[in-house]
Image 1 (cartoon, rainbow, N blue to C red):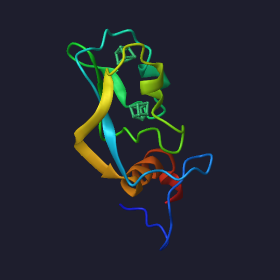
Image 2: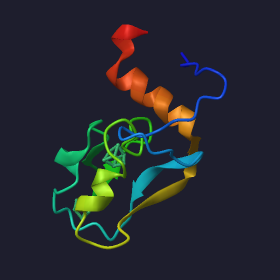
Image 3: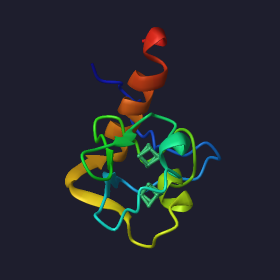
Image 4: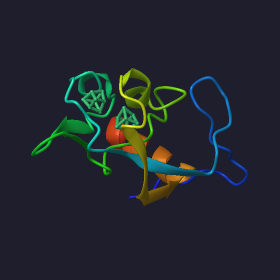
Amino acid sequence: MSVRHSKGYQPTDIKGHFRQDIEMALLITKRCINCDMCEPECPNQAIAMGAEIYEINPDLCTECIGHYDEPTCMKVCPIDNTIIHDPAHKESNEQLWDKFVLLHHSDKL
Ligand code: SF4
Ligand code: SF4
């Protein structure tokens, strides 16, 4: 199911700032020390412990669109460059907003 935006619609974050058009789901690299900081902060429950380190489910990651100005997992991670943008999961801003709506407001569709 797709959420259609009216012509000329430009997505904004919760504070009304315009966001860039190309976004990506995020990826946790092997630098992760399993400190548990990011998992409870994700508004989409997209982060879970994997076989060795925490992993992000790209089907659930919206780059925090609809919740925060920037990815909150990146903000709380204590190790630099551990959570990065995943070039294998490029999405348009509109796709991320669609995901947000499906995850949090599917009852209103
Ligand atoms: S960017 Fe946001 S939605 Fe994506 S994994 Fe991190 S905290 Fe979760
Ligand atoms: S906050 Fe960073 S180091 Fe800690 S579990 Fe998450 S990705 Fe790993």
